Image (cartoon, rainbow, N blue to C red; front, side):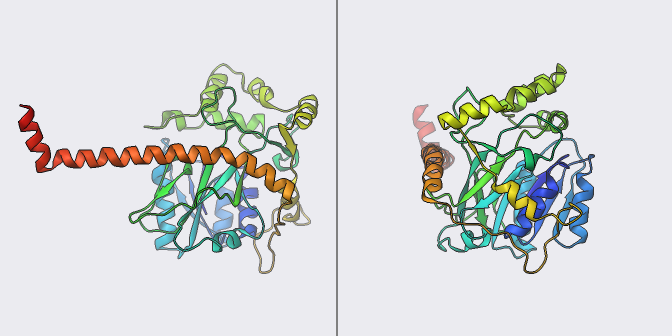
Length: 343
């Protein structure tokens, strides 16, 4: 797994412990100038042999470049079969079996598998660990073009290791010379997404470097958070998104929300008697039950929008390929002849 982090101390150890017990063999992490204890957590996992740490002290985030570098190192120096490109607030959940089992089942001709985002919503901030509080999940994510919500459907990718892979900004796509053929319309992995976890976490997030990074296009929630931070309204910003008891009851009644305790329960099993997360050990693995027919149907309904998105992406790729062919023609002798003819 590749992991790009900056000041994620409230979540990163849970993220590492979870994935290293779910089938990930090794983590390559890039730490971009963390100062909240994140670096020390990563260093502890590096000393234990589970992680390779790449420090990036600069103040400008070069996400695609850094993730691509990590993904290539996984292929060239760590003998990886598959690479999962993850953020610290994402937990990749296999729908039956382990992460290894899901990826081993992919036919050899395919090189990319998509995971579907599933958004877990903030609850009133009582200071408790996010994994205990955040058990409310959005059951009807919006299309990415919708403006009425920041919670939209999207996909993240795992890909076969390749020394020349290019990972897209946001880890939404991966390509390589010769092709990494995506296995379309099948989403065997859920990406549990915990973006807003506490007021303190949002304060740290608001001080991040993404708005100052060249070429970066911030999301709507990042822009709104930046405005709230500048105006001293971060606590109010968090409260506006937190799901209270009345909103939860209404959401459960109309089917827009669901209570989902799977990650909470998994993380509980990974703590030792002193409450600390356990490092991986031989024979200790998380178990993932096959979902029920009802759960499968609900997940398929959510993932259906990703099939539509994929169609849009494929059309964009065809347009891009056509434009490149036209540019090649213009650069060729035929293009020169046409320019002479126009004169």
